[in-house]
Length: 386
Image (cartoon, rainbow, N blue to C red):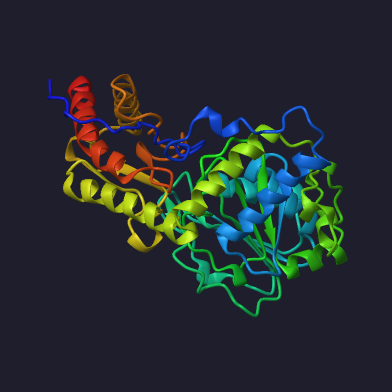
């Protein structure tokens, strides 16, 4: 039996979604939530407007871009944009993990737009973005949460594009620099990088995206909950906190608390710096370990938030994937039992290994303290595997 490390992470929550709340969060942060009130008037509506304004400020979006709140988390935000806006021209979909393939399924099996082209890559690799045709609409994920792969930069996106770019940025917004001038539809959820409560999504729309909403109606029927057509008008009430369905004012209050914390930390630059420091601390451990490695082999495409790791030891080289997953699960059980780390299993469709959230609400000291516990848990799991 190996010896347990002396120091544990102060907070063992390393889940990739919902993620850890901001440092110092307490239930009292929600005391001012205007519960039991009509969300269309007075203080509740003011809270929704404040959420939109603070989102735009922290993310530093251009003045002519607009922010709206959507139902159903990031899924509802991106699917609403796809169902409401595709069909005007050909479509390109780039996918490299489970979530990106959901948008691919929507396009391929549900919407079936004309001239659909698909660009897929296996877990751990980014698609070949050089093949994108920007005379068409282009759909992609900035950070693939399930495979630990991200878009390295926006240089591949044509600034003179004819089509629209649809960017799922749910594990990137508030943690990575995004080239807003090259993004027409950008979506994310409150439960990711800022640790907010689930339910709602956010869509950020460029002037070109709003023009599409004004001028185009798709050939397929669009369910009411996915209709974003109202956001095409320059005076849309959606920019003033109006929502398609009833929002949770408790979730809104929690999101506002996270946005205020982000601003106090120093805004987007500080959040990106926190995230990068966390990844550096994890990299220091991974680079010194002989049993674990990055699933994304190319450092340029390696996620800074959903750090996804694979087993690399010779002891597991000839083992089946089921046996490797048994090691992953045993490690997760041991780490949770000891209160050292919660929720570090990879996505169920990813290769066996670990996934450690390194987003901006995580403290770097906790990442540094985690490494020795991973070594311990691996040794224990391997001893049981035999």
